[in-house]
Length: 322
Image (cartoon, rainbow, N blue to C red; front, side, top):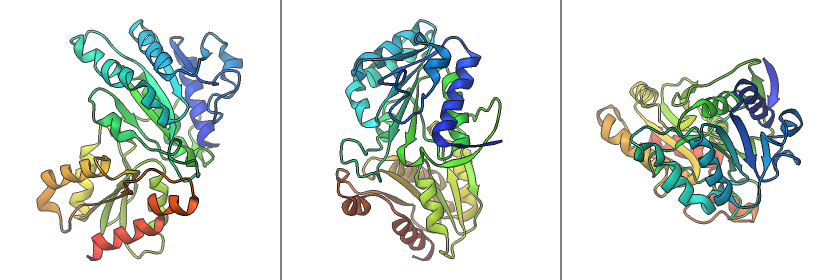
């Protein structure tokens, strides 16, 4: 095990897969000579050369579409979109092409394409650079969605994403990029679709992912509540077995995420829990998420809109104590 930052762990996962498979290559804005906006690809061009680590024009629709073509031609491209907000420029490629090609070919064509992007607020970066848009990619079948919460999972999940024969959107949270943690040395792969039980508890099951896992842990400190924290890690596919087992242990459920509440991951998961596990519940399933307004630039307003440990703690106590 080695201590690494989140960024270093992703870099190590990328190097692992670039070394392992010559068909893996990367493309994106400023990822080669500059090393990436967030330094995720630092040093890769020097090691693997300009033919495998490619700088692209500022044209998300162009290079995401090019990545799809490369995947269909037998390569394993990894495209980095600088901010998740900018994936909206390439939504036709994502939703009408990448997500559907395997299905429309009758399963004859594989699409081993990984898109890495950065999302999340708490940085005072305002409405166009602070969003978590993962729910948009869950609405259209055909794209796997990954949201790691710690360095070890970042390395293992990015490796699994690249090895997968399906399109994967890998979302890094900007608040986690400098977080340090123990990361396995050597080959490390974390299977997609497997949640992680961060801590066991008896009073309530709290389902979260990405940076909000950290906020949930902070909220539980000193709360007097025995909370079982489940890091979903991947949102598509969901680990329903882990979700079901946890609810059956605690009989209460709270879903915490940073993206907006309306039509989000939380309401979708809450609906599934209500429909499939209704007889196990001792309280209504609750969602703690961002308010349904654009993310403000002013830090004082951003703290009101986004989930905080205080808001999460209040939601926990409401579900447990009524």
